[in-house]
Length: 223
Image (cartoon, rainbow, N blue to C red; front, side, top):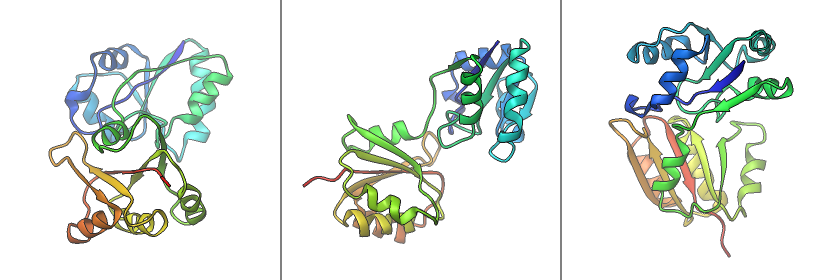
């Protein structure tokens, strides 16, 4: 009677842990963000456990059902399309509901994109704040302004369609000479990290249109 939160590879399937495979084989049900995407993963590791869709559009509706199933004696695993569930992915609501119902929750250690991006950035990582995806419209400017004097290294997720726009906004608000690092396609064939000032990164991605999944790491404010 437990909920397992199981990280899955963000690119390279070799990053799947032995323990993750063991847990996914042993549970009675796997909650998957996209059953088609996760189907490829399960097939690769010959995991035949049944799956049920659990994503941001149905999460509110399915949470209580999941709680009831675990209470009745089932052990369930939660996975997202890639990385650790609940980190900029569905998962928080079901974890919170389980905690509120005194159901044990165990999160396995494993892949998440922001850690390798932060470590390879060369920017201070003894203190950092993870901001995930910024608001696209409402509240975006307010959020950015509030981060202008943040002294810790900041970590953001961004889609390839907004990377350049975001870097331009960062340069305007944080200062064009602020140090930053942009990592894309972490653990995949075309993995790449570009470092420099925000102005230099704007120039780079103007000349090289962004492709792939991105993590942006920005140095903190200093006097």
